[in-house]
Image (cartoon, rainbow, N blue to C red; front, side, top):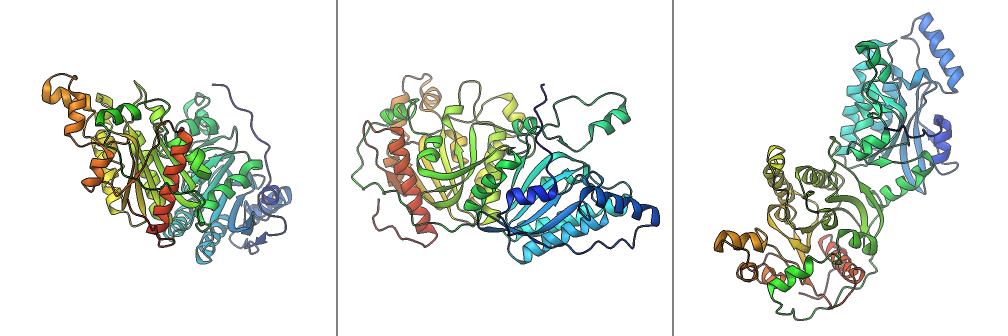
Length: 487
């Protein structure tokens, strides 16, 4: 694997100047107490301070990013390789606690070799206190954003570097638990190249993406626009109600299988703004058949978990990892008090020995369980195909919307035909008998609202109509703007 070019190594002061609005930074740092250090170690610390231009390996404080207040914790690598000793750890913990008390989102930018070896176990165990403070911050419903700079390893990566709601790394950054030099020294052979590189970790679903420091203000702005800013009034027109057509079920099935049918990406492209896509489970899984994003749909901040039909192709069905990504989105929405919008559009979940061994059924069950117990506003949208347990996993919500030609069934109609008739020829008949159509789902109380479709309309037009309906229903659920018309 070719090693990506590494970004410029920013100092802590340079990064603060780059990311924060000019003149807004206020330091929270008290002078470092060196009474615990003996004379020799004190000399080491003083030399490190002279070299780095900082009094410790971290700087903390408060500033603004495009007008929004944030608390910041920034590593300085030039101070003993950014290592975290007792004073640095206590400084981080104090900053996190203060951010929680003041109700501030927290941005951390790491660049560290980990725990400071000169201080040993007393410094090492302080990573627990940092993590405890961060989990209290998250429990308070406050966002935590992490930017991993080159290098971030050891105890820093294994504590506060891996607890963000959104985690990105700079291009080419070395990010890993074990330093490659340590591995080689202990094992007598080099670490496999390319594993601990930001781009590889993003591809593997360990981090959300690769973001240069120069682009960090834009990413923070996008995230906080969803995580902090209030909902807006909405701008998209809700499509007028009309009697729904008595379309044959098979006609709807065939329409939703067309490649030019509007999908979740059309919904985000034409009905949303400031979308920040999250990638992976944070646990080394990534499945592109499900999309998780922070966004504003018709100016309503929300988390979207969406089944991307365009990525569900033969040989790459929606697997257990995709459902685990969706559950990550559910967790973020619940933790940060954001509405959750789940978009159903799937020909069915993966059916394979591998999916069985990776707990497909359990993941479907856990998605359903999570959705049925969420306390934030939830909306489910049957956008097109709604097939099997994979669709059911995204269905439970306070409000369920369907497009006029969307459908929901326990199996593809062909599968139902095989079970009942022993062939696939009766698929259209089975689709009709099983009441899969949106109009049937509305009559049966499975969905509450149906978005009318217009023959020959573009994917953009349908996407905008669906986004408008979602926006209206979110305003209704949050008590901001009641919707006057009824389905």
